[in-house]
Structures are given as C-alpha cells and as structure tokens.
Image (cartoon, rainbow, N blue to C red):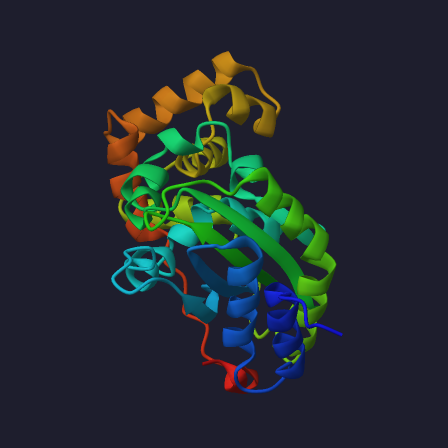
Length: 275
C-alpha cells in the first residue's frame, strides 16, 4: 500500500515514542508545528505562592516573544495574566483562547501595553492540564510578529479536536512534578502590606480595585467582580489614586509592579527531561 503523507500524525507518533524520555518536548513542538503552525510554544508549570516554572520554550531565532520573560513576567507580572487566573480558579482541563478569558479592558491595561505588546504576540491558544496535585500545566501556542496573524478557525478546531491527546501526553510526561509551593498569598493583600511599609494605607476594597485595574478590568467589570455598583467603583478608584498620590493607570502600574515579585520556583529533580 502506498504511504500517505500524514505529516502531523507522523510527528505525533514520534512524540508518543519520546514520552517520558529526552526529546519529548522537541517532538511535541514538531507535532504542533505541523498540525496548526504556531510561531512559538512555551510550557509553564504554575504552583501556588511561587513564580511559574518554565519547562520548555521554542521561538524563531531573534524573536522578542520571550525577551522579558525572566525579568518581567516571572518577576511578578504573571500575577496579572489571565492564564494565571485560570490556575487560581482551578479551571477545568482543556483548551482556552486568550481573547476568551482576558478581562474586557485587557488590551487597554498597562500590563498589556508595557509588557504583553512587546512580545509581539497576536494570538494565544493554551492547553491547561493537571499532571499532579497542586500543579497546573499550561502549554501555550502563540502567533506573534513572525506571522502577524491570529489562529484561523480551522486551527482552533484542530486544537479542540486534539486537546484530549495533548492533555494525556502532558499529564503523562510531567506526572512527576511536585507541588512544592507555599501557601497562596492573596495578591491584593500583598499590595496592601507592601504599600503600608511605604506609608500608604489602603482599605481591602481599594486594594482589590487596584489589582483588578492592573489585570485589565473596566469599571463595569470591576463592579461585577466585586458585586457593587459602577458608581461605587468610581469612588474606590478616586480614593485609591488620591491615597497613592497618582493620576493615571500608568502611574499605578509603575508603583505596584515592583511590589508583585514572588520567589522563583527552584527546578525540581522531575525536570530531568527538560531540554
């Protein structure tokens, strides 16, 4: 029988052969590349109370997509990321698109404009898996400045179709990851405590509003999150800016971003297959 050019299936077979062995991550990338043509891939392990652990990443040579990963994202900006919010919510395993889970004003937030925009990312599809208790695994496929195009409907449908396979592979390969984190710390509480050290005292509600603003929520969305009226949100917002001596979201971002840093997660023994 004449062989068929099933390139994606052939790459999947190689990933299966490499499962729990060196070379798995590269084989996984090759499969994704043939199946849906992403520009980049990063695999992150989220745990409570510590910065995410990077298990694998791939991008085009010279791409800026991961240029500020260590200095900014792992340094604390991840706390504002919609996919980190999925970890905190223990969202069901499956496929998520950034545009579907991001807050309504995400693209107007300082996090987006000061960090996310410089990555040149245009679109993200993320498989969320749970390889072991206390660990959320994100396999993020991105389209960036290399192609300058979002994922097509066909690519999204393909990812939805292969999601059960991706989750099974990821949970099998990284099943040895340990939670090894610390007790989760409320981010809004961290903001209050660290501002108090600088002589700026916020109420719990004002700190909640500050965090939601940084995450990219509009006043209407904040009102829904806090179950208060939009007018009440405006009052909290004015009080927040007044207590901090600020007049813009950019100034709020500049004040609070250095306060969001979290301890880095040490690489566990189970990361022995990382390339």
